[in-house]
Length: 221
Image 1 (tube, rainbow, N blue to C red):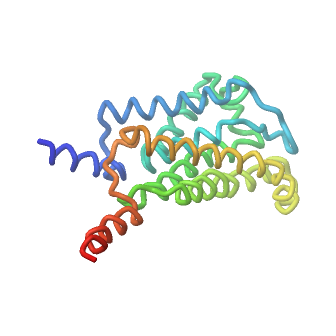
Image 2 (cartoon, one colour):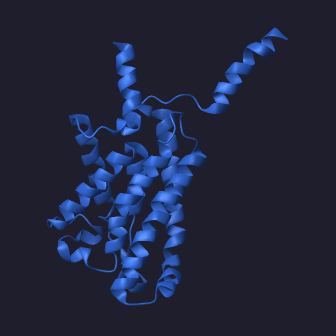
Image 3 (cartoon, helix red, strand yellow):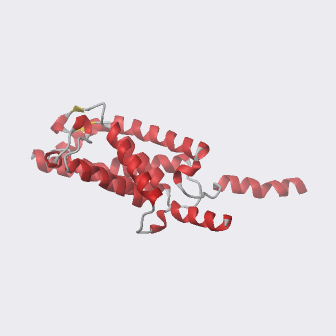
């Protein structure tokens, strides 16, 4: 029984690429969708082009890192679908279809791909992810991927040249790097204190394995 449970947990770590959802999957998706919505409650302030600066991308990074690529992306789809239906789940209590035709629409759709990319990098290996891997995932998925979707849409909506939009969007970068650092710290803490949050069994990091292998040799000497 124990072996069967462990095998299931390790499979779930990469979501097992299962297309069916169990009750625990649904609950975890709902929790992270609610988390990202809650991070928008403090509101936002607009910068160039009317794009709001919020804490919600921090939640996107966490969703991908903890849930994995499939469920992380699904949590963002659920959030955006509920917001499109009119629920005030976006920054500042916004909701409805009008929120998806403004300058920030691309960034919100980028949350889906961003969470997927973060999860893909963090859960790419069966070994416990290092802080460096989590940080790279947060930067690549939580910043670069979202920018890659959001900036062209912002340029299209505002009718400004893409180069000018890219330069103007650099105002987001310091804050997003801070969110990536915070997400890395939170995920590293969860890996140490509550690894069950990831619903998978991690193998030891390479350094730990090498040290354990080297120990008997040192004793023999």
